[in-house]
Amino acid sequence: MNIVVVIRQVPDLIEPIEVDSSGTSLDLGTASFIVNESDDHALEQAILLKESHGAKVTVVALDFGDVDNTLYAAAAKGADRIVKVPCDGDAPRPEAAAAMLAEAIQPLGSDLVLVGVQAHNELDGVLAPLLASQLGLPYVGVIRGVKPAADGGSVVVFKEFPGAVMAQLSVRLPAVLGILGAEQAPRYVPVSRIRAAMKSTQFEEQTVAAPAVEPQVTIRRLYPPAPAARAEMLSGSETEVAARIAAILREKGLVK
Image (tube, rainbow, N blue to C red; front, side, top):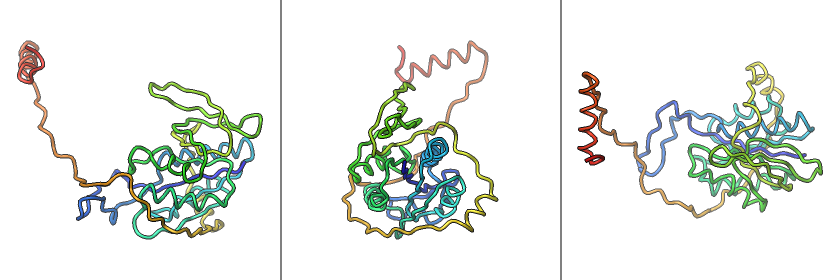
């Protein structure tokens, strides 16, 4: 089985992120970047399939953020091939990113494309289904496990529905899967193995044309949340606190 995994860089939310002067996008000039969490799970799922069934794993990523370190870590985990797609400036919007990734993935002859089902810097997890549309392949998202089927031409996937209801589905290959979680947590790779991968891993660059894609959503304004009113701390006896709670509920019109 030939598996392609899409890896993305996202801003690290531990550090504050500012809105740029236009007021319509984030200022990523001083941001630090980390691997997208659900993409990391997609890579782990691919490595698990490789270890159990002899799959070949190719990682494809846009050259954005701190992607080189992430790709070396992917190689250290067991990825067989690394394809990096150059992109100028900031990360493209999901519509353009899907088109660029699809152009890089098409020549690879993949049986299965795994991509994280969501990222915290995109709206409603749109990249995975957009990528499937660009590739002309079926898509199933919110997946928490993948196993090859006995027929060799499909996979069994475990899809999570609201309320933590799990469904087992058979998906005919080739297909794109949006991974929410791998069958086990992404493995830790020692720094020594990543350094070894830096010496032995060769990145392949696949240059693609950045498409002029009409955005599906127009951002009119971004701004930090306005501070809300402070909480009122209640003190006194149980009777006094209960009386104050009742008064607050009456003031808000919740009780009469």
